[in-house]
Length: 330
Image (cartoon, rainbow, N blue to C red; front, side, top):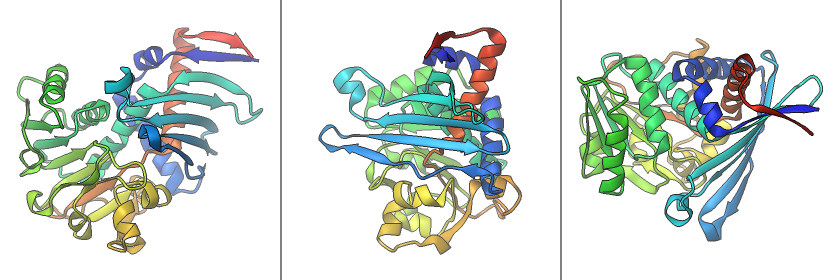
């Protein structure tokens, strides 16, 4: 049995954001139409190390794509071990035989497919004339979120970024200046409030367990991509923002126990009745996206296994076409 091995760097050389957005949107549609098997991801919590491990299997029946991802989140890794916060391995499966056909690094796929989900959400929920982006967090996810937004909008007037340290903000701006055109002003700010006030699109990518953004700081018509809250107990928004917003989740099952809404749901502040739609329902035309210029829209992303599966399949096909990677016998 021959299995293709792809390193994370090889995967990165194969994927473009436009292609990943297209693949992930198709996966969301398939979920909304009922052609997906995707059990909620189980967690192992390494509490003494402030980390966790997740297993994410899925099968997209009509597309005949199946994969399993094993992924960690350890926020202290960069400082303590010089390792990424998120690391992952993805096994792509042949549904016909159940045999593995590829094993690949999943860190870049995780970043790209999450960025793609934010782009898809903005496509359907943000105002078309959005000109100011406020980023809360300056890690890997903040990079691919902005790349996806640039893929959609082309350029912005301002991109503001806040994170816990001045050094991380400075480093983010230096790296992302290469991604924006000369008419887009990208700069660090010293507070969350400076990042989000009067912003048209807000993206949160921190592991915070307390609200960082207050309701009085956000403007009418803003769209918020909530990316950082991806485990029980995490939250980045004042729950009062959610109470007055059109809330769209990637998956109710996951978001209710590990997404931005998990704490407000657990406390009875909001219920399932307050959730407008899953993103796939909007992408598939089952429900509408933004319906007015002044409504506040919120996308709650937890990361779905089907996003990994279709992105891994895209990387696999391109690797075969380009003769990238190496086969092993197992």
